[in-house]
Image (spheres, rainbow, N blue to C red):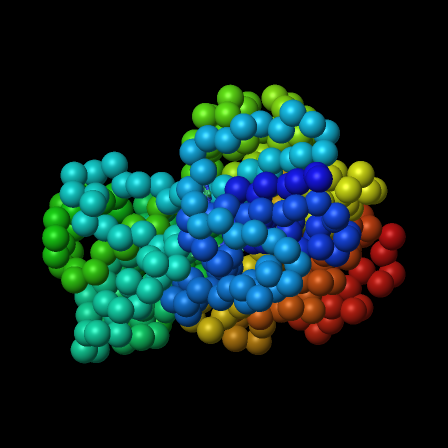
Length: 380
Ligand SMILES: Cc1cc2nc3c(=O)[nH]c(=O)nc-3n(C[C@H](O)[C@H](O)[C@H](O)COP(=O)(O)OP(=O)(O)OC[C@H]3O[C@@H](n4cnc5c(N)ncnc54)[C@H](O)[C@@H]3O)c2cc1C
C-alpha cells in the first residue's frame, strides 16, 4: 500500500493531510509531531491559547495515524508510491547575549500556556519586557497589556516590520504601542539576568522577559537526511527536494528555488495544497497573491503582495488623519502591495487587482471615499 509520512503537524502538515483526504487518497497517512494533536500557531500570541485544527476523532475517522514523536532520522522512500513530507516549520531565533536563558520564547502551545499562567497568577502591574517588536513580539506585548501588565517593548529599529508592512504604516503601528500605554525603546539588549535586562546601558526591571527576535527554518532533520538546504529546505515548484524525488518539503521550513522563503500561514497552506497535487499527480495549484495578517490592540492589519517590490507608496488616510491603507507601486507604477488597518474588503479588492495587473489611478488610491468595489473600476 502507498504511504505519506508527514513530519510536523503545524498548518502545513495538517493541511496536507486534509487535502489528501479531500483527494480520496487511498494509502496510509501518518503525521509525526512531538506536540501531539496538530494545532494552529497564530492564536498563541493573540489569546495565549492553542486551537487544534480538528478533534482527535477526525484523524481516527480518516485513518490518519498521529505519532507523538520527534523524528531524528528515517529511511527515505525507495518506491514511487511512498512519500516523506517535511513540514518542520521554524524554531525561535535565540538572543546571543549573556543571560539569554532568562528570556522565554512564544512558539508552542506549552510556551503560551506558561506565559498565560504567569500573567494570570500575578496582580495587575506585572512588569513584562518584550524583546523584539516584529509580528509575534508586537502581538504578545498588546496581549500582555490587555491582561493588565506594565509592558516595555524593545526594538532595534524605529519602524519594525517596515519591510513587510511598508515604512509609513509600520511607523504608525509602532507609535500606537505608546498611545496604548506600552513603553517602547529603540536599542540593543546587552545582557539579561533573572529580574532585569540591560538595554543601551539602562537597567530595565522585569518579572517576565520574552524574546521574540524572529524565527529560523527548522532543518535539522533535512540535514540528517542529506537534503539540499539554503535558507530553508530547497524545493522545486512541485515542493519536491531536488535531492530526492519522493521527499517533499512544505511550509515555513521550505524555500522554493529562486524565490524568497515565505513564513506565513496562508503560504504554508498553499504549499500543502501543492504537495497534495504532486502526490495525487493532479493539476498544479494556482498560487494566490501573498497575504498575511496580524492583530494587535484590537486592530486587524493585513498585507497583500510584496512591499519588497515597491519603489513608491501612496497613502490613504481616514478623517482623523490616521493611515487606513498604504499602497505600494513598483518602478513602472504597477500596484504590487498594500497594507491596511481593519480593511478586510480592501484586502480582498487589492488581491484581485494585483492578480489581474490592474493599477487604479493615484487619485483613486488616495481617496478614502472610493470604496474597495469601485477601486480600479475604469482601469485596465
Ligand atoms: C505565535 C505565533 C503567531 C503567529 N501569527 C501569525 C499571524 O497572525 N499571521 C500569519 O500569517 N502568520 C502567523 N504566524 C506564522 C504561522 O503560524 C506560520 O507561518 C505557520 O505556523 C507555519 O506552518 P508550518 O506548518 O510550516 O510550521 P509550524 O506551524 O511551525 O509547525 C511545524 C511543526 O513541526 C514539528 N516538528 C519540527 N521538527 C520535527 C521533527 N524533527 N519531528 C517531528 N515534528 C517536528 C514542530 O513540533 C511543529 O509542530 C504566527 C506564528 C507564531 C509562532
